[in-house]
Image 1: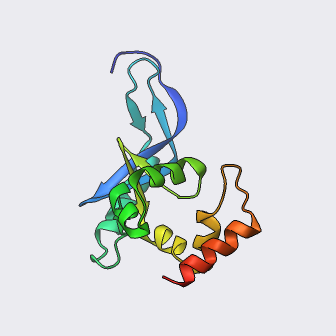
Image 2 (image 1 turned 90 degrees about the vertical axis):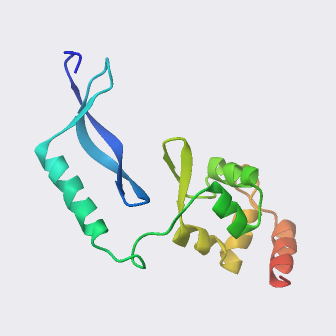
Length: 144
């Protein structure tokens, strides 16, 4: 600790158990504006510990299935760059952990629903889709 007064903030923090990582938003903490050190209140620490404990007690089948960019690209049969573009456009829900993007399998699988995936894939940069493009993509997906 550098001795600078801490500032109370609401932050996101990453918790983990085994090979899984979970980003928790809305955690109250005291952050040093000078050195970046973070201190949690006893109440927040207790909440994080209980959350971690409950997740560690789940068996392997019940734990969240977390994917990286390459795995999502393979699942969607697109390039890694397309995955990054979909994150940027807001078409994919992702969490950044360190330098890597992480995805929940259930979120990606919901995209694979034929009606939903057609709408997501066919959006332009402004979020709009032409009826013509929608019908072309829908026809292509139904032939897969």
